[in-house]
Length: 194
Image (tube, rainbow, N blue to C red):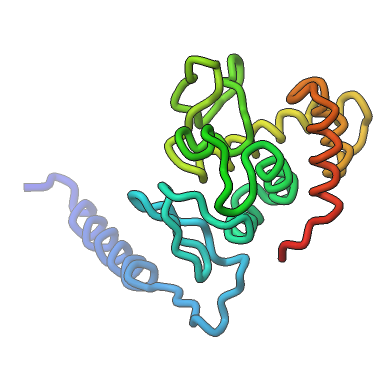
């Protein structure tokens, strides 16, 4: 059948090599015992209408406490979690006292519908505020927005912004009301979340 006498031994050798590699690599799993896992090893898991992180199990359709949002935010948007919570409290209220935009559209930060950047927004309301599928989408979107603003800050000032510096940088771009700036700085300075 084969004209070349080397073809069959070569195929057999190739098959045996593949089997040996498969036996040594495939089917082996690295299992990390729960006692050895660290908080940084966990990730935010979104499944249907629920979010799971560390020991938290949260509904995406109900606005959680600011402490739970901050816990998730530290993983989801990193360094911007504290600023997100400060803006959320000023824009849409604290625990159990949320604005109509927060309750109806999950817009916790008073974000207008973006025109030129990537967004998690589903679209604009009649008054041009962004709407989100969940509070978590709003958080991620605000993190994306702050990352973009940080690039502008670095270009202008040649350094990384602190949260307070970012508030001053956002003032006039994100919100033009002096009361917003003063309240956001106040909330940030009196931040007591863990």
